[in-house]
Each structure stands twice: as structure tokens, then as C-alpha cells.
Length: 435
Image (cartoon, rainbow, N blue to C red; front, side):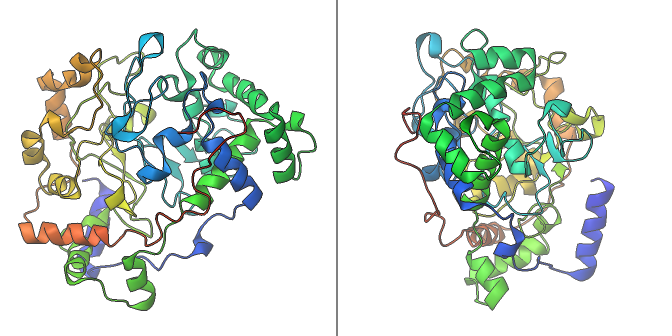
């Protein structure tokens, strides 16, 4: 483990189980209700995709706990939702699976959130003078009012997520020249729809006419929606923290294990159960990988792909565990379908990886991609490199103790998870279908 983890572990051993202070609504970014309502429509409107065939909500759906239920998603060109999503046919058929699992959106409006995406390629930073260190670098526009607002813009520019393939539409063609050139095209699409134009004028005090709407207002509306919509702080664990309401016996035993002997709280720390750091777990590898121009191997080097530091190889951002029982499959590539599976992997990564079967991956059938889905596993040297890059070491726990940890993780599920403030709209102003 790196020095920070060792220091955290030492503190844990010296002080015993430690939990963060109770989380409250004051810990979240303030949002404007009119902007959030506008963001709800944009979130589910395919107008923001290059080929007008996919929305943010397709892969972060209300009926799927803000995810898509797949190990690796099917982006633009696909049809349907979740496990029933198909890869499309003919010229519109997908050319690649999304290389990483779609992360859940719960509590991302918390003021402590400073880094997003599995590899942390978006961070709060003054490096480029626009508030963020991002793939757009200095071309990310000024005025985005939260990291969620900034995050919302990047799926729109991703070829296999929402932009589409070069030659199919003007958005992806522009993005192919430079990442920021597609955003003005999308902004014009939106603001020239009369209903959207009026909503922007109503929601943003500095917008007097629809012609003034830019991608910044679109990002801020999407950010307001995500920040307000996915707050979940009413779990049994929250009731225990605030009021002393007892947890079920197995969950209480699991809580002691989580913050004690099992050392889960070393990395899953703080009110969101994440240190927002990066750790290597040696998850079973599969999928197209997040390849780079100079590294076409179908592998995912994680954080190293952003920092170019060898010490960051195969490390991925620690996910929040709030509502984790609802957001399977687990891991940056969705390798494990159950909480028990991902817990046991943490306890002994080597043994878990050896026992893992490709059938455990939740991958919709795509015959023309099947040959490459597990190709990386045939590269013995790459598999050895990934197996050596571990920040966790074997820890023996009994079956009963694993079951107690699972029970505690279930106690992190909010009581009102299905009662979202706005939910999925029945229609969107573009008139396009709503997934």
C-alpha cells in the first residue's frame, strides 16, 4: 500500500472503529429548482446525442438506481434499457462496448466531491483557469458552477457513448477536430426548440433571449438536476448515526467489521464512504479496454492513463457505497454481480481472480464483438502485471463475517430511494422518445 493508506490504517488500529459525522442537506450544493426541472428534461432528451438516439438517462436510469445494470454499457446505436438493451443493427449497430461500468449518481452533489470518473480525469483545479482539470483542458468553457455540471459535458463528446461515429453527424465530426467544438452545435440544437428557449430564459437570470444559451447553461442545468435528484441520506445507517436507532444485529456486527478488523473504512471513508482516492484491486480484466493512440492493447491502466505515472497503473477511484446494494454489478468494469462476490475479491484478490468465470460479466450479446470481449485474458504478461499491482492483501474472514458485511452494506440503502423529487419525464421538448 502507499504511504497514505498505511497512515490511515495506523490511525484505524490506534483509535478503533470511526465513522464520519452524520450527513445533512447542508452538506450538499444548493440548486435552483427551475434549473433542476430543466435539467431533468435535458437528462432524458436524446437531442444531446450526436445521432439523437441516446440520452444521459439511458445509462443512468431511474428504474435502474441511476445506473444501467450492465458490466459494460451499450452506448449510442443500442436499443432498450439495462439487461434488455440490444446493440442495434445495420449501419447503426455499435462498434464498441463502453469500456467501463456506468457509475451510479447518488450524492454526487455533496460538497466534498472533487474528483469524478473511474480514472479521475475530471478534478476541481485551477490548472487551466476554468475551475477544472479535465480532458478539455483550457477549452472547457468558463462558468460551469460545479464538478457535476462539468462532468455532464463529457459523455456528449464521447464517440461510443453519445457523440456517434465520425461521418454520422456534425457533432462528432466537430469533436474529432477538437473536443470543445461539438458543444456549440448541441447548444444551438437545444435553444432553437421554442419550449427549451423559454425554459432557459425562465431558469437563468442572466439569459434574456434563447440565443444567449450556451453549453454552460446546459451543463449547469444538468448538474442542478443530478445534484438535487440523487440525494439519499435516510438509510438505516443514517438513522443509527443521527438518532441511535439500532441496526439489525447482523448489520451491527458488519458495521464493527467494516470500520474495524475488515478495514473497509480505510478507503471507504467519510460521509460518502469514499476517500476519493485511487486503488488497485486486481479485478478480472475483460472488455475493449480504455485504449490510447500509442497503446492500442485492450487493457485499462486506470489512473495512469491520466497521470502517466507508473505508480498509478491499474488504480481506480474508490466508489461511494451509499445505496450500493442497488447498483450492481460492481467494480470499474462491473466484474462482480453480487456484494458477496466483490467483498470476497477484496479479501483475497488472487484467489478470487482465479475462480472468476467470464459468465459472471453482465454483457448483452454482441456477436461481432464477442471475439475481443475477453481477449486481454489471453495475454499472460499483462495479466501478471495487473496481478502484481495490488493495494489490498488477503484477509481471512469467515462466511458468517462476510454475510455480516453484506448486511451492513444493505443498511446503507436509503428508505426513499424510489421517491425521487422529479423522476423520469413522460416527454421531452424535442419530441424524441424517452427511454
